[in-house]
Length: 122
Image 1 (tube, rainbow, N blue to C red):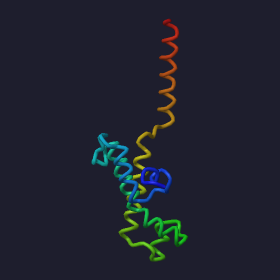
Image 2: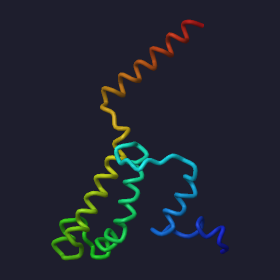
Image 3: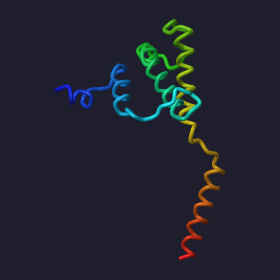
Image 4: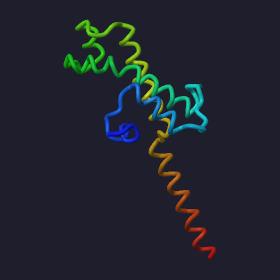
């Protein structure tokens, strides 16, 4: 395996993810503001990468929750806070496109009405 194929053929590590991401997003605006959409994604990514070793320790000790990790002394209070922060950041990034069912139905009806009007005007 040569250095060109290594990233594609070996599993990613915490160290390789930021470098690969930097290559993929070169020249693309990414905000540092966690309240901005791109900043929200960046913030979640950074927190997720930072928690990988902590999550690995929980898995290695067959613990499923932050509370179990704290009780077993496997993680510290600071690590528990970081895990919670990361989970909240990921949730916020996922929820950016969250719509109530009524909003989706209303949008679909409006789209159908426009399509119908366009078809009738032909």
